Image 1: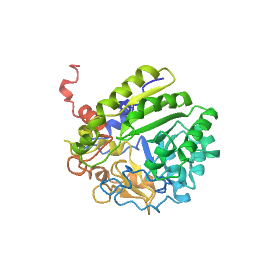
Image 2: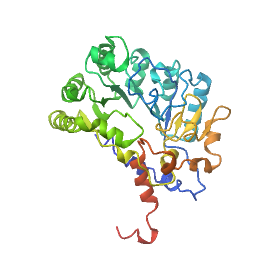
Image 3: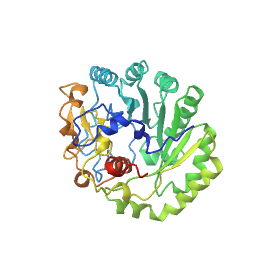
Image 4: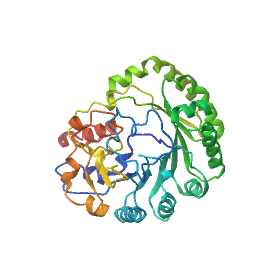
Amino acid sequence: MGLLYTKLKIFHYQAKIDSLPQQSKDILPPVHIRIKPTNACGHNCWYCAYKADNLQLGKDMNKRDFIPKEKMAEILDDLVEMGVKAVTFSGGGDPLYYPYLLDAVKKLAQTPIKFASLTNGSRLQGEVAEIFAHRGTWLRISIDGWDDESYARYRNVKVGEFTKVMNNIESFKNLGGKCYLSISLIVDKENAGHVYEFIRRLKNMGVNSVKVSPCIVSNDGAVNNAYHQPIFDQVKESTRKAVADFSDGHFEIFDSYHALDDKFKKDYDWCPYLQILPVIGADLNIYPCQDKAYNLEDGLIGTIKNQRFKDFWFSDKNKFLKINPSVNCNHHCIANEKNKMVLEYLYADSEHLSFV
């Protein structure tokens, strides 16, 4: 299997990259779109950025919002017509709580568009699980607790929910199909000592990969680093040992546990990735990324409440230049490193390109 987490995927879409600069008049479709179909979720994770009052993500989110069935069908029709390559369903809420997700993925399964989803795994059952197993590209389940009691504390759910999710994982793998099942292991001070053994358990269950990531506790990178500093070396060593002991051709461990300053500070004034991977919110607003979703003050690109997505997208390109990352995005940004690589590529001096 090739590299799944490489930051260089966009460089396989040359025409899209060439259309990005401010002076270009071309507007090409996004390569990949995140759709947040609903803001409902049955879990209440203490660190959830959409619910925590001290984090900017989700500050204008209405928990009751969801994309109407007919509008979702219209959006998917537009994406097919535009030639979008992939759709990821994510939160806001949990996509598997969206009442029309089965209709949406059945529709996508009949198109060239690849689809995936993030989920807490509690509703990964029945026909929607079958469709994802056999037609989806990947699923990623977020987990923090390591047993019923700890999981219930993390997510404010009934004791037994952890066992249910773990059973759903095993049942999903037993469905067969080629869908890549990944676990996002969110690390904090409470579970830091359980990383190695829990990764071992997940491998034995047949999952394809585990991504080890830090929980985000603040909009400030230094505050996040201070929170993780007491456990940082322990988690890095546990992850290193797990990679050495468990990684093979069928199981990957991706170490995304890191100091966070590089994802907070921006020194560039426009965002290439909002034209590559935008977000459609459950409120039918368009946002530049998942880190600005439901932030109306400095994260709103526009809305499709009264227009089709394709009409919105191919209108005035200036809307894509509204976000100044150095001013508007001094918080966690998953696209920061990718943006810097794209901008370095675009700003290379044309007279010196031959001197490779």
